[in-house]
Length: 195
Image (cartoon, rainbow, N blue to C red; front, side, top):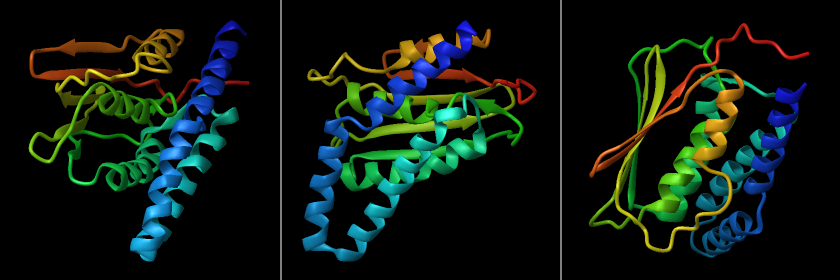
């Protein structure tokens, strides 16, 4: 019961972070500009924003998702980021080994990518490079380090993700070198059920 309550609290906080005024403000600003510049792009942006919100709202009673579901939802989120940040980042997914049966906590990948943007600067000359590697042991999310002096340290981040995986007796591994920040997310097997 305690673990369930923690998961529900996490979902509530995650939902609130995704629906926060800053996220909505940025999205509406981009959409407003696109409407005048390129209506087709504005339509695609609106659909991606809708899919992102729909995914977040669908998680109310879903403490675990398959990696496939998470990656599909991530497509819409990455599309939004490309519209916001244009040509200042690269994003790659390498499916080294993959099973659709593997499950993880919802929004894990999105929150890690948000952290990469929040804590790093990115320009066309010095792009932020985000790579997701999927193998049979972990999902690894890594990015080059380009510290942003204005990074907001509040909100949901790696600490919350780590705490949620601990509920399932899983350890999130964090590694940092001078050039790279690396997070290894363990799978939560699909036989775990919630009543």
